[in-house]
Image (cartoon, rainbow, N blue to C red; front, side, top):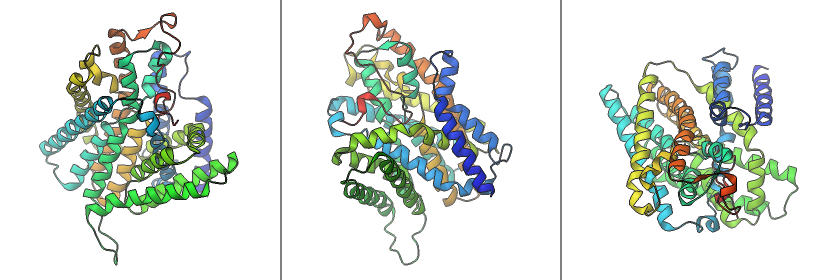
Amino acid sequence: MRLLLTVLALALLSLLGSRLGFRSRRASLGIRLFVSAGSQYLLLGFLLGPHGAGLVSEGVTDSLAPFIALGLGWIGLLFGLQFDRQTLRAFTRREHAVVIGQSVVAWIVLAAGLVGLLMLAGRDDPASLAAAGAAAAAGCASSPTGAAVVFGSARVGGPFSRLATLATSLDGATGIVFLAILYAAVHPPAPVGLVDLGPVRWIIVPILLALLFGWLFLSLSREKPPPNEFMLFLLALALILAGTSLSMAASALFASWLTGVFIANLSPLRKRVYATLARWEKPVHVLFLLLAGALLSFNSWHVALFLAGYLVLRAAGKLLGGRLAGPLLEPTPGSERFGATLLSQGGVSIAIAMSALLVLRASFPGSQVVPAMFDAAILGIMLFEIIGPVMMRRVLSDVGEIHLAADLPSNQLDGPGTGDTGSVPAAAPG
């Protein structure tokens, strides 16, 4: 009965939260930045969770794993739909190299720094090192949510903001790939009777799942079901795909992202799929944030240490990545400050952190570093969602790409949309 009441309460909160929205243009900038990240739902989830008021106990939290799987599958599918080849061709190879390069540099700096921090603290066991790699995967991803606050308060246009839009929309793929590689490196033993192929198996499994579920979608959607049935079909697809991946200790985000890429490039219904997923994105995302907050524990002083390291190292990684990409951006004004526009984080980063927590907690039971690193990553994501838009606005203002509405042609790039998982006009399925 308690589980049923918890599910109903979370569903009600998700629907109410989606109706209230994530942003209000009438509010002050500080409130808009806090609300745009959905931080209030993370805090509410913590207060309701086992380490807060205890209304959602630890046993109930474990029973809510299917809803976490739903969130991972939904976010992964929606994010993958943006990798439509027609949209990607609108950007040059150099621009794609810049986006991938800066996120890889950010992961290297963050992973190396966190590992060094752990070694100084005498924590060089496999669980701690895996937690550092997972936090780095969450940290190398950016989010367009904060950018939407900046772009919604002024008219923004120009080559620099165009590239920032691409980067904040797509560089989460780097973190998802690094997370899949991490899972392959720390995979649990194969079940009895099943041949253990080592790390190769744990990379192949999500790829095969993506191909299977992508093919099933193409086969079952040929009849073009009505809207309500189509929404339920996508709901089942996200839940079963992510749930199957988690049950195999494979990366649910990696599998669902690849499935979204598959659908975006092969399905004639990709526009309809994108519209349906985007329409239900907010209630699913609110539910996901509530569950993420319930998983926060703050039961170790290491959280403060890891949080400080996460903030400093991620900022350094993004700034360094942007500076190294500077020569590829010439003659774009302010190219050496490109990394400062990519500090915002959001849904994809939280999904990476939650996915890592579920698998690493099962692979390394009893580890204190795994939950502490998760807490630090979630807090860091919340803070960067507030810091990021301020830095982006300052850089775009300095390079002259923030204009009054009367100064900008009506066909100029307008910037990110409102989605938290990277749903922007520049990357919407075509």
